Length: 316
Ligand SMILES: [Zn+2]
Image (cartoon, rainbow, N blue to C red):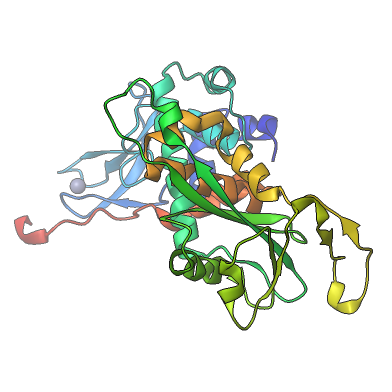
């Protein structure tokens, strides 16, 4: 789906509702919280989304917001605009001016809030679905990054900002990787994280870490004195296919730059924010084929719309 097609899908309030219902973002049915009768969608011109739920019980007639029980509940924006924002974010449109213009949103803080929400979706996705790279026949480059956060915290000179270490791994065959903050570079800190993210059977390459020799059975470690010397094994090397090629071991650093370059200040502000940008980067690597479809699916999995608003029936 491209942006023009999406815009057509959202060109009227009815179409917005239909789109949301087909993507499980708005329920097909609501139940009145006061009398438990069925609510139906009724036009209501005074409100931005033009529709509200209304109780069908003639003695009750309670209005319930269209956004109740949905991810849109806390937002004053029209739902169609939010969907456009989600589309542009999923396709990596970073320009705030473009997002403001295409979605008709004037408030930068509103855009920031939604971007924070979407990075939270990435975090929750990876919490449920562990990121793992490598495996038999795969070569995984490992490397460390020292993030000197104080460089980006100069305005707050009284605050001591400790540097952060980040461990990165990159599968040379699948072209997928991970980046994760680590407390230090001791084998005790790194080995469990490597085993969590790198599948057994991988050939692990790094420049000089002694740590990786301790990975033990299931991993083959090539320690290199010079990153430029590494000869990348061919794809499907276990089957003898492909050609050897010389490569430079800098994928981890390239991933780091891509993940953080536009948001260094935010990443320096807190470890949590840094992690959310790393999750966003990994999410983009994994879902580059159809990012909008992926994020919509993940939002509806994580925040299923509530089809009923039930409250204790003692008052009935
Ligand atoms: Zn009612």
